Amino acid sequence: MESTDLTSCVHLPSQKNKNKTDKLLYIFIIAAYTTITLSTIGLTQGFPVISSIAKSKGLLDIEIGLIYCLQAILCAFLFPISSVILTKVNKKLALCVCSLLVYCSFILYGFIISMSRTPFLIFSLIFSCVEAYCETMIFLSANLILWETFPDRQSTMFAMQEVTISIGYVSGPSICAILYPLIGFSHMYLLIGILGLIVSLVITATLVLSKTENKTMVREQADPLLILRIILTPSLSLHLVVTFTTAFFFNYFYPVIGPYLISRYDVTVSTVGWVIMSGELVYMVCSIILGYMYDNYIHSLHIVVAALGLFTQAIGIFLYPPSSLISNKGGNYLTFSIFGSIFNGLGIALCFIPILTSLLMKAEERFPGVSNVEPSVAGLFTGAYYLGEGAGQFISEVIADFYSLDVISTYLAGFVLIFSVVLLLIGVIKFRELKMLKHPFKRGIIN
Image 1 (tube, rainbow, N blue to C red):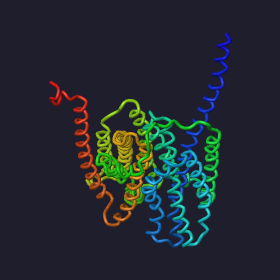
Image 2: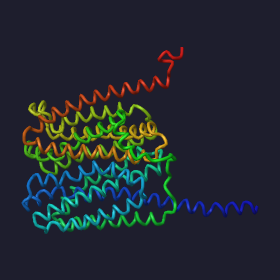
Image 3: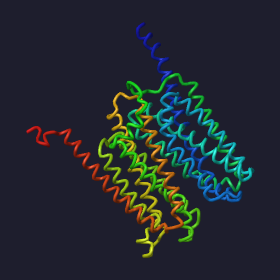
Image 4: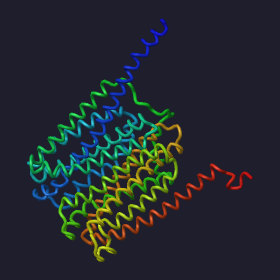
């Protein structure tokens, strides 16, 4: 009887501590996803108006283009660097500090509207630099914390983060359309900054109250040259090339699709927004489904599924905007564009989730016992995406004045289609080699 009482006395506090830790973990996860969404909203909510404000201050088109693409270009190079930094600092602390910094910068950025031409340009570029660094640290630290906490749900955690980022990209310009006419530029950024600071304080509180460390995978030591080794490994660098290519063609149309549809088909700005949003919504839903499937059911054929994603994206590019091969034959061009956006969103979901899963799995197999595999893979993958995003948006602006967008979409769709076929052949060959290794009797080794 006494033994029973002693056992109950021992287990009851432990259960209470576990419940407290679980609650803090869930609060932290919600706050982390929320701060990702809010930071993305803060980044994108000024996109519809910054260009017109900059032009009213006398900035040149190339200077306005630099304001737009500098952040993406910096992110491409900062993600691998940040992945190294996060192996040496506390990830939760990095998330707290960078969240506070980025939201303070949002509040300050709202006041640049009263500045003259040169200060406006300088502070806009400074804001892009601060946002790029904070964004890399927020995205990476949150992703790595969740990967370490749920090591058997890494694809799902990445998909959830992609959903929160997509929500920010979709809602940012929409919030601007609602708030800018009502409260103006400065108060719009002040509002998002205050909301973000509140969420950052919640994250800080969970860090202070939590007394447990995240679950970590046991490995031996860090490799300071791991990022370079991954890049120089052909089978791993192929994953980065696919990521860059997919991001390039997905983001290529963002700067030019709106003006093209408005000028050629006489649609409204809100209609363009719905066309773009349809693809983002499909990407969000499919990312969660694919992330769950790769964590629970699918353990092979990653490259083959990615090739299928590129093929789907080629169809989307052919329809979005309608290719010159069909735009002159009549039909509902808006319907073509909506279906093109949907195929584009489905294509990148089919590509990104298996590519990241495969890259992480193969890197861990290639470099066993190395502690910084996860941050290095996360940094390189996201860096390749942002490099593709910046390159796609920049090149689309450069060649938009020389070729019609429906002609460009025809050639781009053809290129992506050829690349998807090549990737499919590589995936089939790799899958056959894997089957041969698992069943050597099929090669005649065992009779």
